[in-house]
Length: 515
Image 1: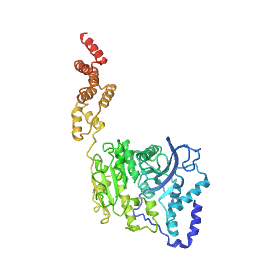
Image 2 (image 1 turned 60 degrees about the horizontal axis):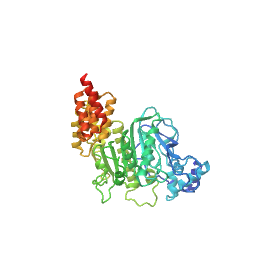
Image 3 (image 1 turned 120 degrees about the horizontal axis):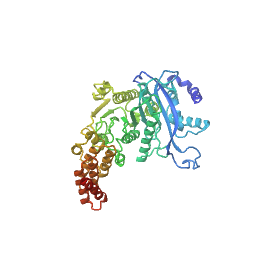
Image 4 (image 1 turned 180 degrees about the horizontal axis):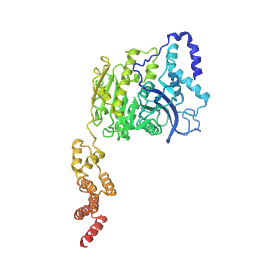
């Protein structure tokens, strides 16, 4: 590939003096040098495609597990010359096919680069391909442990689409991990819940992989998603409470409320991680607050999380990719803002992201104060940034929250605690089966008194259930409350005369009483 760039440079040599990159880094990097490691691995728990190649129709002979090209940016010791943008681009040529021959890979890399630069002038193409980046390939890692940030790309995009942001975060003391946006079974992402869940599962795979990295502090995890990746990360957080912070770069969580509705588990009660939503300037039909429809927005419904909404007015949706829309923006592009204004807006994007991650992954009070000040108080140029935020309303109404509250009184106040949650969230409920399982788990732990309280709640909520009173009777008996056990078993038998267990237990209790 270096030879390819040499040939390109010789071809463009007469115009080299006029070359300049379209992107300018306006925010200095942090105190760390940046390393980049590229790992080709598979998620063997998931397949990828069918038995035959969808392009050629030929039966596949290679690995059929899901390919996960993994890019890791990390704090490093300074070393040698850094990578160029061209080095990143070649990674996109075969990011879901790790079995190409050297010759085929070289051909694919050249075609990929040509396909992303054909709308640029010769001098621009060379300037962008040879533009220096912050990262150094396989640099020696810096000592210490650092929070983990997973980056989820936009629809069908490559892992390096925001290499500038990923490098910047690594320079600030984060381990950043990314993989391409692949559909469930094809290289192309699909606009359905299956596609979102495939990318959410990739996020989970990368979180698992992070545990193998010596630098990674997996107790502090954030997930950044751009566009489609900015709905996949919300799905991932609904399933994984270990995710401590979410960032959406004009995320599709804004555009696809119907997808969220289809996934019954993606609810405000299950997405409680704080969220920073960086939005493109709103369209005329949208609410001015971070460009979202307040009536249907999931962001508005996230009442149990701290939510920050920041609008970057120079940026439209595609502009959030530093590589493909800013660095490789076509020469004939018609834009309202010039390249310097776009670079400045991207710099503010990086500024908000790093302050947010510092606040929620590093416990930095300065970062939190920055987020809660107005853009003007933070020194942003007039009309470039608008923002608002709301604080989370405490713990969501869940069984976990009820258990935490009830545990404070050894479960003696669980009925009142339940009613308090119900008053705050009328839709909150616990099934009879859930309460029954909960009570028996406490019994198995030797906590009969606590189990009695849970079964009493079940009997109150389901007063016509013979099983609820049968379980309550068992808990009373194990807690030494024989009279109460007799009453509960008697009530169970009245509700269900076929309950042979209640009959047997009443005989046992009667026998114990006469001895």
